[in-house]
Length: 288
Image (cartoon, rainbow, N blue to C red; front, side, top):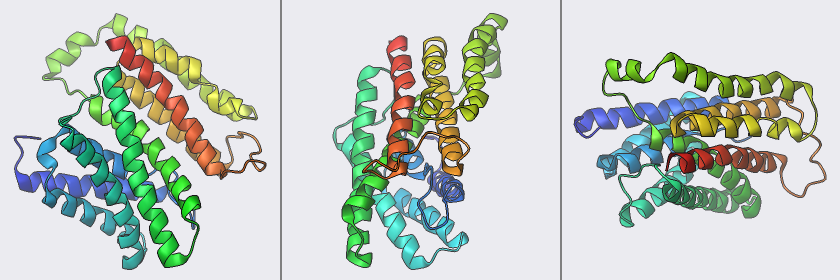
C-alpha cells in the first residue's frame, strides 16, 4: 500500500467502499437498515493499518463510494448524504482516536491490541449512531434513542467482526513460503475444528430457541486454539453473517423476543457480537 501511487490508493478506497456498500445494501430489508453493514469497518481498518491513507483525499474518495452505492440502488441524493454523513462521522472519529494516540499503523497482535480494537469499535459506532440519531430527530422527528441503539448495536457488531480480518491479514511473501507451511499434518489439524463448526449449520437450522445461536461456541473456541487469528476471525465472521441472514429470514429460529423491551434486531446483533468476539480473544491470547 505504501509503495502504491496516490491515484491508485484513492481508486482502491473508492472501489472497496462502493463494493462493500453495495453488499451491505443487498442485506437491507425493505424500509430497514442493512443486516450487515461492513463498509465502515473496512474503511476504518484500511486507514489505521495503512496510515498513508489518512488524508482528506481519502475521505472524499470514500464519500463518493458511499453516495454512489446509494444512488445506484435508487436512494435519493438527500437520503444518501444523510446516511453516509453518519457513516463518515463514525469512521473519522475512530481513525482520529488511534491517530492522535499514536497507535497507527495498528495491528491486532495480542490481547492489549484487542482491547484497543474493542475501544475504537465502540467509539466509531457511537459517532455513527449519535450522528444518525441526531439527524433522525432533527429532520424526521423520530426517537433519538431508538436510532442510536439500533445503529450502535449493528455498527459495533460490524466493527468487531470485520476489523480482526483486516488488522491480522498476512500475505505470504512467496508461493514457496505458502507451500512450505501447508503440510498434510497442518491441513489435518485445521480441518477437524473447521468441520465441527460446519456441522453446526444443519443442526442449528433444525432446533428452536436461543441455543440455535450459541450452538457453535465450543467449535469456534476449538478453532481459536488450533488455527491463526485471521483464520479464526474469518470463521467467526462467516458464522455470524450466516446467523444474521438466517435469523432475519426466519429460517434460524432463535425464539420469541416479543416480551423484550429492546428491538429484536438489537438483541440479535449483541448476541452475535459476543459469540464472535470470544474465539477471537482466545486466538489472540493463544498466539502471545
